Image (cartoon, rainbow, N blue to C red; front, side, top):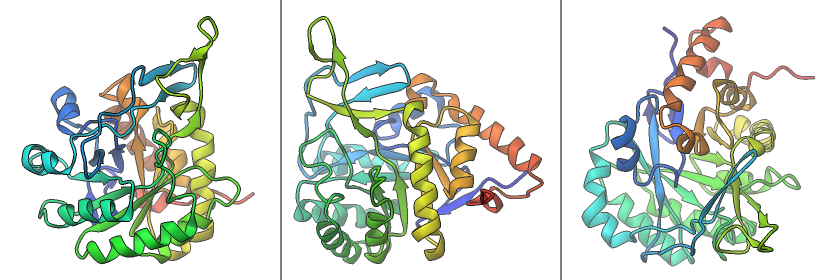
Length: 308
C-alpha cells in the first residue's frame, strides 16, 4: 500500500480527497448516503452570522460540461449552527472543516470566534470568492480589503488553521494568493465556481432564479489546474503553503493532475452530485497511480510536473 495521507493547515487527513463546501451540506447529509468513504475531510456549507434563505429557484441547472448553481450561501446561521448542528458535525467519522462567509469584516470575525471556541474545529475555510451573492467576491477582488480581513481573522484564529478560498484569476493569478499567504493563510483552496450564465432560449430568461451563477464540473477543470500550477510555482510552493485543488474532478486522472500541478489535497464538488460513491473510485485510482509512478507517498508527486 502507498501512503495517501496529507496535511492541510495543520490538519492531518488519511485521504487527500475533500468534499468541497456547499456540496455535502454540513457533512451529515452526505454521511447518511455513503458514510463519507474515500474522503479525508468534509467542508461544511459556508456559515454566516445571520441565517440566509439563499436565492430563489431555480438554484441548480445542468450543463453539458458540468452544472451551474446559484444557491446563494443558504445556511442556518451561526446561532443555529452552534446549538443544533455543530454536535453532529463534531461526531462525523472524518474531520469537518467549517467554511465561513460574511458581508463585513465584523461578521467574519464573529463567526470565526465561534469556530475558534469549538475544540473539535482544527481548521476553517474562509470563503471570499462566492459568485452567487452580490458581495461574495468583494474581498477577493480587492487586495487591500483581503489583507485587512485576513490579518484580523489571523488574530482570531489562535489555534485553528486558516484556509483561504480564492476565485479563478488569470490576469494576476498569484496576487490574491500572495496577499493571503502574507496575511497568515495556512493553506489555499483554488478555485471557487466560475461566474457563468445559461439562458432558456424558449422563455428568453436565465435558467437560474437570478441573472447568473457559478459554473462547476469538467468544463472548468483545465482552468483550475492552470491556476493551481501558477500559484504553486510562483507563491505557494516556495512559501511551503499547501493548496487544495478544486474544480471539475470526476476521475482519478483529474485528481492526479491537481497533485502534479502543486495541490496537496483535492476537492470534490460536482462529482458528489453525480455519484456520492465517486471518492472511493478516485482514491483507488490514485493508489494505483502513485504505485505506478514508483513512489511510496502521494506527497512525492506534489508539484512534480515535468518542465517544458
